[in-house]
Image 1 (cartoon, rainbow over the protein chains, first blue to last red):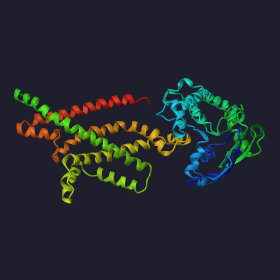
Image 2 (cartoon, each protein chain N blue to C red; image 1 turned 90 degrees about the horizontal axis):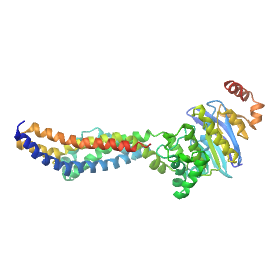
Image 3 (tube, chains in turn blue, purple; image 1 turned 120 degrees about the vertical axis):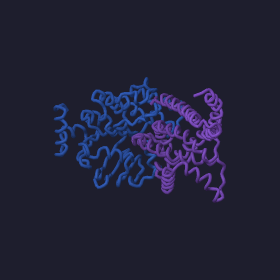
Image 4 (cartoon, chains in turn yellow, green; image 1 turned 90 degrees about the vertical axis):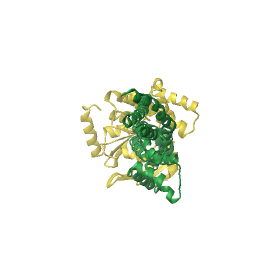
Length: 251
Length: 219
């Protein structure tokens, strides 16, 4: 296992959002996390990258053990340099061009020489189909293009695992496809990905492992066919039923 | 108005403009530059939530914003000598104006920093940057863009506020005007002329502000 977390707990004020979650990601795995709104999926992802500090939990990353509630800034920084994160709201640096957004983490955080960073940045932009938009500022790009730049920014550092937090939820429906297509390409390249998503088709067909969460816990997990065709748990069945109705039964 | 008044206005124009160029403008620019440095530090220690230093910053802003500028000038120039600290008029004025600008501008900058979406900072952490790198490269550039119009306001305000320094013997534009008015007795004409020159300075600054804002609108 490349990344393993055990017993993550997290409360906001008095509300317990994560009630002891265990999750494992092996090299090359594409894990999708599905579940109703408010089930704790996003919080789980944010805790794993320490955007939120878990109240309890243990993490094993590249065979090193950490206590998640007592990580030093240094450990967190080292860990983040091995990961990439794609946000629901893109969060591109508004004062930087697309290319600068992509190279910032190389030049500033990793001290990669400018020229090498530029080449890597252009390659990453090419991979997401935006090689010609490197000089554009975020506000000059569509939502789908911004999210693709954000993906380029996440992959340019060659992270060991990339986290996606509902990457298509903020997009207009006609722009969802271009982002999912880039993500499918990444999955096909064998990149390790952990994806919180509401796109059930994608969750099913791009993943090799599906996790269903509800009420701060993992209710059920397994291979996509198992979860989508033969869910064992009542809550999983109910959730999939509701989602299918929303999509006219086409899943 | 008769020819004599016109002639007086013409003659006095340079006599007022000159101290404007020699004193008012340098006094404004130096005080504003120092004020911005003070403001940036004051805002940063509050945003970064550094204990004790943060409380000192709040106290400083509270005192400066809660007392009249003219009184501050008097305290520094006329008051301090009684406790053995004697400062010349111009250094006194620079101290007061820069700390005054610093207090007001720090609130502007603090608000502008806090207006930068938290997602920008999170994205910075996620690409591996540390707090200072994120501040210097992502947050501050965006905040200063937001803060630019209100800071320009402060600068324009400061140009006019420097006229208060006439009260502590700084030979700036207004003091020059007062002397000419007293000598010539054409009070109305001379003070209007002084006002006109301030208006001139502020118009240039306003134009400059518009130009800079246009140039900064790349993002």
